[in-house]
Length: 298
Image (cartoon, rainbow, N blue to C red; front, side):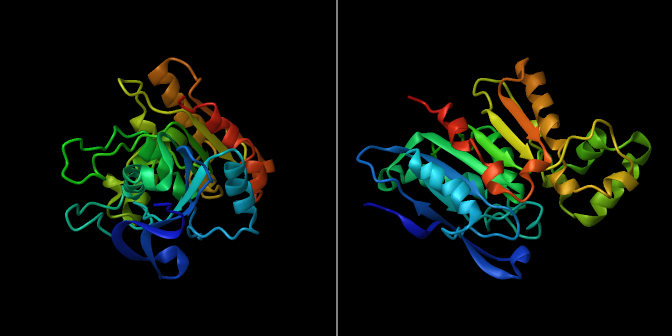
């Protein structure tokens, strides 16, 4: 089988996406295959809100992501997925009623289970993501979700990746943690109360910052890009209201600090926060393939 092309299903769930006007979406992906007689590395793209897996060839995002990947010998998968915050009212699946946190993980497992058909080297899989898609950071920092004894060959596959490159990455979905990290002490209680009033399932959202581990299977290297400078102090409620708190640049150093605590150094996490990246995917993703090439397994 020489699998390639659009709309390859990795799961059975369908949903109406509120960020796309209620458009019906499926658990599937578009696959851009590098012609090769040997297995090649794979880059998995997880898109931001307001976009779908579709990447028109003339778009700046396609030019920034797909073109350099294929030129460097990586195949590329653009996935459709649900998000635990945006889609918190949905269940993960009929057998798993929690919020939908695991779509990116399931896509990784499906791709690995079908590596021969897709021509993929399952040892070399990477995530590139933006905003909503940086659920991929959380996914990458979880313990491997594979179930080696499962009767389902997909679930027997690993969810781990070699590295993550994330633009406007959200490194915690935990309101209490956000408040502790970024809000002045006198305003934290009010911030948390407001956050919890907005999200009924906020206790399930999760945190990448709180997941970093240097254990037996150390967490992968991460590169983070933001389009505004880091703010060198904690903010009041009034001040944070003036910021883009969803893409807050301080998410970057907060995650990298967690890496320093876990690993004793900053070698596995880096960030850049600068206005030159604003609305410029070519600039934001410049060098992302080279970052992944540095973490290929031979």
